[in-house]
Amino acid sequence: MTLLWLVYASGINGYMLPWDKLAQFVVIATAEWFDALPIFGGTLIRNFIAEGAVNDRLWSLLSFIHIGLPLAVLALLWIHTHRVPGANTNPPRAIMVGTSVALVVLSLVRPVTSQGGPADLSAAITTVDLDWFYLPVYALIYRWSPGEVWLLVGGATVLFLLLPWLPPKRRRKAGFHILLHPDNRIIPVRDGEPVLEAALREAVPAPFECRNGGCGECKATLLHGSVDYGLYQDSALTPDERAGGKFLMCCATPLADLEIEYVPTKTPGNVPVRVYTARVMRMKLLSHDVMQLLLKVQGDEVPRFYAGQYINVLLPDGQKRSFSFATAPHERDHIELQIRRVPGGLFTTRIFEEMKEGDTLQFEGPLGSFFLREDSRKPIIFVAGATGFAPVKSMVEHAFHTGMKRKMYLYWGVRSLRDLYLPELPRRWAREHENFAFIPVLSEPKPEDEWTGRTGLVHEAILADFPNLSEHQIYACGSVAMVQTAHPAFVAHGMSEHDCFSDAFKLAPHLRAESAELVQPGGRR
Image 1: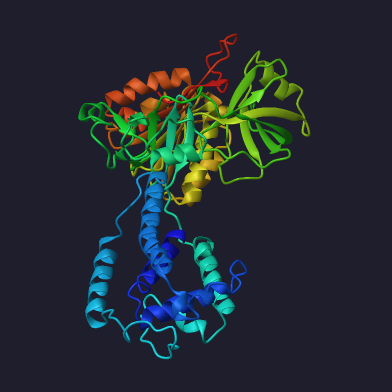
Image 2: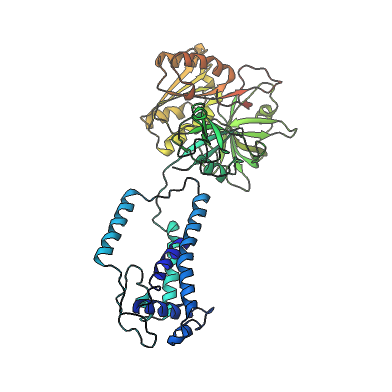
């Protein structure tokens, strides 16, 4: 708004310099208008009561304003374009051409010419041909009071300032997400927003200086995804650097979900992980060795997280146990955990034998770089081993909530039928959503199971159904052994490294049960 008013005042000032009848009207009307302000209190109009009151100082002032206002406009434009990275200094072509043509036509049809001869302060101006482009407000100064005109101008200014927040608001297009290293943190980025701006908004200690592609301070490495590199100087990013995966965060805008690595200006992990206290709302035994915990966060709402992330439960002795969110991000009332009993496990034994509803615990989070990528159109294959179903549940329910139409397949591998807890939930998903399919796989079915479905290793069932995985994304959730076995087999069948994401859970060092999960998560493999 400051720039708009400066441009408007500069145009009005141009009518004062010829010192003809129109100039006399504009100068006197301006003086009377500004005299309505308490700071002037009627002192300006005294300079134009008689011809002899006008001297060279008026022309010096008008000339100074004529030069100073455009320079002030240029200075503020320069500051603004350096404050905003990648600022658009040219309007859309249609607006630029249309406005230019309109101004040219207007200058030919209604040219600005001198009016009435030289100014004469001894005679009042009663008739003048106004320029209705620049001077419409001057017609109101004598029809209304100058104070009322100030109220009109002030009200219009406030309205223009509030326009971005007034309804109807333009819906912002959904953006992407960025996985940052070394922070191991996921941040959102708005549609068309440079990577650097998204990082700074989320308090990421990203390096920068010029913010316009000239210095190269914000150089980072693109590990996954694609970007629009934007405009930059070759000295800031050489062709060899770009070919090697480098890009400038201040200029680049994401074209997909990204995984990047940068050199922070502060120690990695500068943004602290929040610690929460939660009360156990409900405990439900889902199978012989899986307990469902519903947690109510005390004094705060559920932390905002991405589908697939996890929390660390803090034990009294300082140890931590990691469990994935089984709830989708849009469920803000509680947190669901699905915890499998580990023989000899410190925390899981407490859950099954000592914990009761109403107990409290502390956890930190959200954590993890495993989350649902929403920028691809490829069908998704979820591979869940035992309680690896928990993050899958979070991701699938998030996909349904957001209206994702991509085909999704869930292969859930367990040993026997009694290990398949909550089987009716994915079966209901399959009935209610055409783009979802559920395939349970038992590796060691018991005779009493009377199992007629798929058997064997879960990844082998996937390869039997999808011998070519080049057009699919795979999300593997479960034990390290399962992921380490499945990954090379998937690669051998065409899976791209960029389309495989895993959240393999390892054992605490003192536990060695091969089937235990959900103690220490890993990242993408």
